Image (cartoon, rainbow, N blue to C red):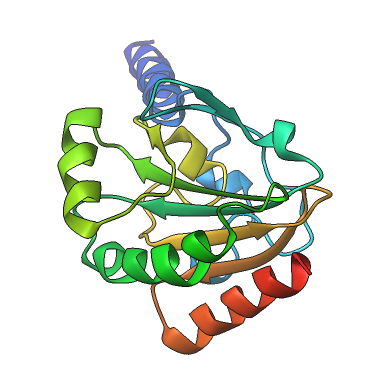
Length: 184
């Protein structure tokens, strides 16, 4: 009887810990993991979300249908992000920021507004930044602990057309060309 009780206690404890670790999200074992730890792939409808922007406004992805959207997951502690962001600024944002059919949003992962502001000022970023303070939006696109920088390019129908990881100049050039072509 004591062994049964201990086994039952252990089972309940395991279930509780598992539920706490997943915060109601799908267990990582329940998702298909693609290249670079993405859990979405090209052709998928981009998972919807609403985040607060640094200026206090709200950004909802599904409200952007009909536009070309680029999401860039970033953080101040990410050295690769610091290297990539000036290229996003000059080669994408400054080129298309006045195009009503284009939206670019940087999504800072798991940092406070107070940490983000000096980071973007130092890097010289002027494109809009949203705050994913608990990393839940990131976790709807890639494994929660996966690395950044990441760019997700979404077409006018809300479907993912390109996924990048890290900053490689050849791949970045393809991203820029795709955006240019989609906005012609």
